Image (cartoon, rainbow, N blue to C red; front, side):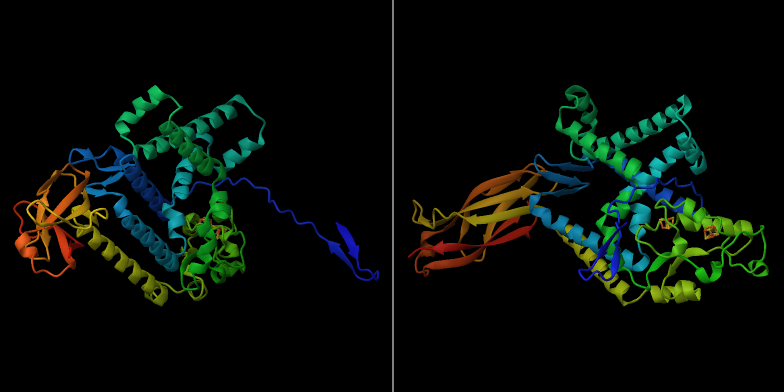
Length: 477
Ligand code: SF4
Ligand code: SF4
């Protein structure tokens, strides 16, 4: 420690050096069983079942989900999304943001604790660690010992399985963008000097590093959501909390001892809630930024409470404003949690979801852009008819062959001269030059100017067009 003195030789202030870098303390999370652990594993099974299964699923004779960047075209079951449909992606992002606001206001870091890929893969990696190296105390003991063949073999097995899991996930992710059945042979042939191989290794490497090595550091230091979540929750959000009033003073005591008889609260100070915490924090010190809301500490503490024959819930989901202090539960707790902020977020989320589904359901099966040919304003045809030319871009948004008849509405006597019918393969885009014509007799006496018209597309056998697009028809002087 250095000291400074002012120019008059007066007060001396000690200078303290505070390190900007905090050395990481390795966390040896203990395995835990219980209701929330089962829930987390159910979500792991669901998310990974969907993630690993979807690229192999067939739908109407083709891949159910394929993000084909070459064309570019996204197939999601019967839906074909193209660059013109980017609005749906933007809408999805808005829905995701609203869902995050809603669930955070309702119950804190639900996303982090149960379904964030970082949590899901950390859970899988911790399970591999448990199977290869044992539980917390065994791992701690072995890590403190010098290297032996057995220790090296266990660590090698763990890392080999971690890498295999990471590469499997990388392979699957790339399989969403290329034909997954050809990906294996392609990688075997092209080796690592190919783009698919690069992305498999890149994603696999990220996963191995994040879930295997960095774990809680991603959540504590790198994830922006951890920073903003404090602005989204308030005193009435459900969070994981330790009940000080019931638990303190803490202390060890024989099993099934009445806490009051020994002048203690319900907490036996066993520290199991700290040992199972993947973030390495003590929830008894209050809600902290590092807490990912995984509820492992609830499972651990409930187990202790059951063994002690005490009521469970010393650590529980509760609101910090009233739930913990007043021991609120049931309907009263629900009344506090379902407050205006939650209702507003929930209402916005429901409205966005309904609008999204409605927009998708009523989406025209074909996309049409009509651009007037600027080079040719209007011209007279061989038989004296007035002709207007348009560049029409059509995209078949379905997975079937589409046939349409072009029509024109809005100006009597104007007809489509060419082309009459269009046939498009599934997902095909076509650029057409369309000529509209006004017969000479009808053109005579019509004032010059731009008349609004609509180009329409009608499927054979249907009377109503599936799509109409506005444009103008020019009548020259
Ligand atoms: S697990 Fe429960 S009893 Fe044990 S230290 Fe944590 S709060 Fe106290
Ligand atoms: S304090 Fe509890 S809920 Fe928070 S990260 Fe640790 S174990 Fe999970």
